[in-house]
Image (tube, rainbow, N blue to C red; front, side):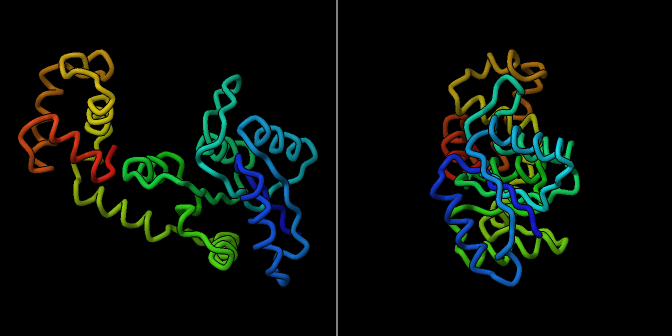
Length: 219
């Protein structure tokens, strides 16, 4: 029997996942589904499973779910990191409504789910296919995810954590001279990095750089 943990703050979406997977009678008709709707209930589900020595085979996790501040778990990404720590054999499939390039890159780099896709790309048949692939030991990245990663490669300057942080803070309205209060670099170093990022984007001024970064999904 396959044990599947479903985490999403929209109950109808979870029920849709169950209906879709249950249609694959050969593989999932007898699957055991557990549901969670936020970080707190997700952690509780995981902890209860561990106490019963029951291991989930796969967790399908929405990135944007209500946080559980008391346990320092802020989103679906933190839930996957927790699963990796306490239940490392559990496969993870992250779904997100975000298509911003940097968000996708951060998920791939720091969370490393076994599968990652945009919710917009998922159909009942593709859900069954991806879950099957992941359970078979394969990794999966959707077309949108692959596109975002290619964009990051094209703008290789954005691989750098500090360069991405500079753009994020500028987009939030933090003034250039105040960036050193948020990033552990000197003002001179930040200016040098900013100049290189402008060159990578082919722009001359900071405001245009921020506009381009937002337009192309880097922020």
